[in-house]
Image (tube, rainbow, N blue to C red; front, top):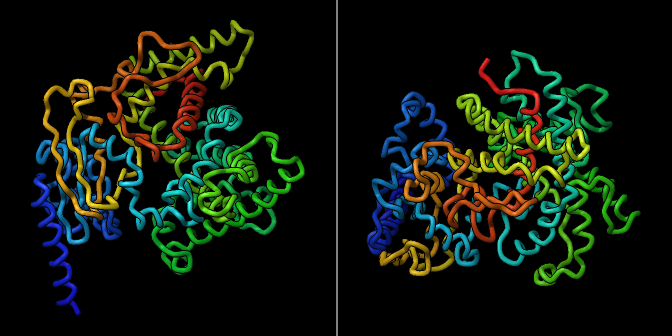
Length: 518
């Protein structure tokens, strides 16, 4: 049996090796690749073994590089300089094509039917049900038609703005010198998501007090959500029945608790909406907004294409879960990196504080003591530019991976229709169906031809000298050169949500405080 397995593995490796040679692209090989389930093990082991080596800023050893999840984060442009902007990694289980050319990445990400998300990898994003991130084809268009309006709704953005400000005030009032900034920021974003995502307002530090746990539950909603995020890896990798008997029984309890909460909230909010019709509910949150849009989907063309008119309860739960993961982790990490940068660069912090003071001064001139989302958020041009610059240097995003549905003629390099392309010849390697493509967003973000002095944090590179009043548009980059939110039709739906929450946190926190090392 072992011999047959070795024979099969060798045959698969040779098949992928022949395809790599036929393509004409540079290639190397690895025992396994970062998208395999086994990479969770090699990632943990190699990160532990090379922890001191990584602190030198030299990236990963060549032999280990491709067995590490998100290896390009530490590697930056080293592999690109060795193999080129587009190269192949041959493994027994897959042929992987890494792309660090912005134009090639954009062409790939905008062709959603030719290059789809890896189905087996997307399945792990469905512990609560299918969602707009995990599904494909007409089903994706249907999910998009239901979930995009809530994420883009001004009512939800205002709720994010107001609740974030409230949570920041409570955090600042209870701050102690020994407190962990990281833990505080994670708690802040989770408390905000409790209201914005589920309609349940959380008080600072309430935890699992008996008076805060509803009947039929063992923990509060915020505590259960926090445990789900902490134990996200086993929750996504293991089936529910296996999770119960795994080394992480608390993960099983947390998932069960969150599912019960969502089911109760669905029933409660559905009853409210039915009483009020399909009009907006008071203080609409993401859950009620999705339900309202779902109820109004009878005439939806995308719904007709798949033969039904509404999302199932399982799909609603799946989408709320993906909102939670994206809205909580991405914003929290961006705030943490931003805080560290401001502590290290006091001149940059002075410039951020200068804009915050100016926006507050203008609000006072208009007779307001507090900032509002509608009037003041668009005025934070420099703060939004700072956020984008932090996300360029620290690209906090899930691996951008696609699979070729059919044999693909990949266009590598700049096309004749692109600015500054000159007479550059475009390569057109032929890659077999099933080839996996991964966008190396870190290499793109550190390309000195696109971003001069890429190691420097300079928010001004994102700003125009003239901009229309009342916008926070970020115009300063060529298409495809900033991949923290992805590109094309499957790009991040919550980018506006993230900007609002980031600006609300930083503008409120720095109104009366500076960030310094204790």
